[in-house]
Length: 318
Image (cartoon, rainbow, N blue to C red; front, side, top):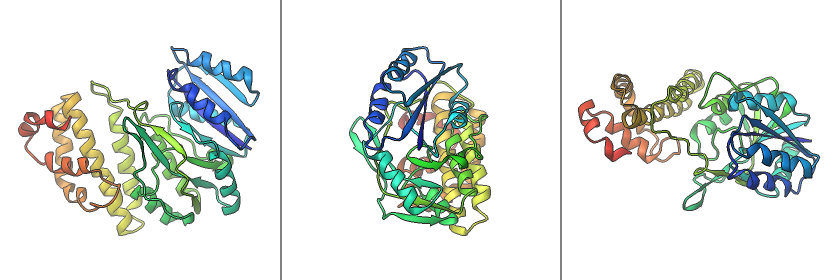
């Protein structure tokens, strides 16, 4: 009934925890598709080990092509009526699948959003505002998508009708924010989504931390996606426009920080700063929302400074 898709790449430290959390599910009618995306550690061996103990587990070993094409392959191979995604360094609570499945049937929607909690060095953290179970119409769902008050736009912590995902695929040209664009495109293709405040998906932020100490062009993928979403959202309503523009400014700030600290490509930083100066007001419009973090708001003002001062004080924003 449910296909669980997990891309696997060099996660031997966390993979057992993830798979065991699925084996413990109270809902039993599932298949698990483990897609080993060219791992060079023992991840592939771990996948094969679990395949031997449960015939609901399928393992695909493939050359490394990235997470988007790997997830698309999982979608194509899936046999379930519904699909959910779990990242290989995350884990889910034992009644997660059961509660999602019951809700998508009762609400009669194409997608159920459940929310997640963050696991970091200080333990479990839930920055979201738990609401009541509700069915959102398309534009209200898009507003919640942009506000990030109840849930985020990752591909995980959601249950989808398989037929929907087989029409709306991940963009394999993107290295970052591909799941954000996928969820936005899903909202473009349905009329309603269901929200239930489960927060039983555990997102390990420590394990998922991928910041490198050198410049990477893929950082700009997220800016591209958020700008694309802004151009669509601004035509829905003024509130949608302001929310989407605030997200865009937040990304400008985050990207400026990365370029300043790790890239040192100051010609790019000048371009980003000019865009921040044109849009800085959007960086403070929603002070009581998850759209912008406190660091992003402070960063909005920081990057209004001349480039020389930014370079001088960059150690304070690391």
